[in-house]
Image (tube, rainbow, N blue to C red; front, side, top):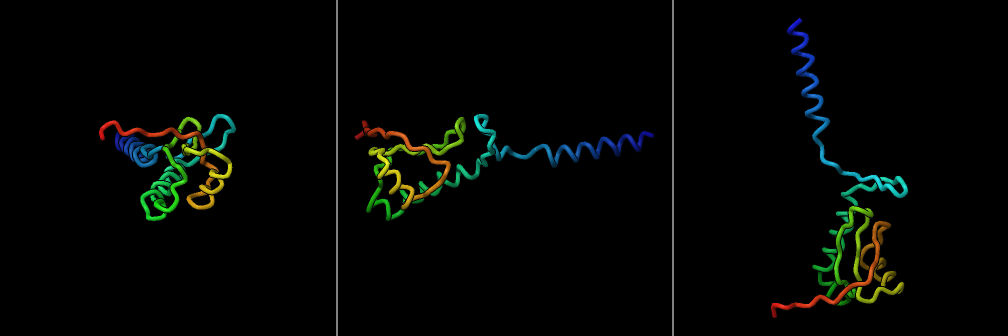
Length: 114
C-alpha cells in the first residue's frame, strides 16, 4: 500500500514539475479574446531594433522616437516624429509590417548630459 502511494505521489510530482513550470508565452487579449504570443511582439520589436542598428537607418530613419512593447494592449508601440499616414506606410513597407504595431506621436528626445 505504501509503495503504491509513494509511486502515485512521485508520478504527480514529476507530472506537475514538467508541465506546470513553463513560462507564459501567450497572452489573451480581454477586449476581443484573441491570443497574442509574446514572442511575436518581441520579434517585431527586435526587427525594428535591428533596422535602426543597420546602415539602412542612416539613409532613412523615419523619425523614430521610441519603440516598446505594451503588454496591456498586446502591441508594439512605435513613436514617429511625423506620425502621418504616409510615414506609417513607409515604415511598414521598409522596416516591418505587422498587425501588432500601433503608431503614436513621437517626442523629441533631449540629451541633457552633453
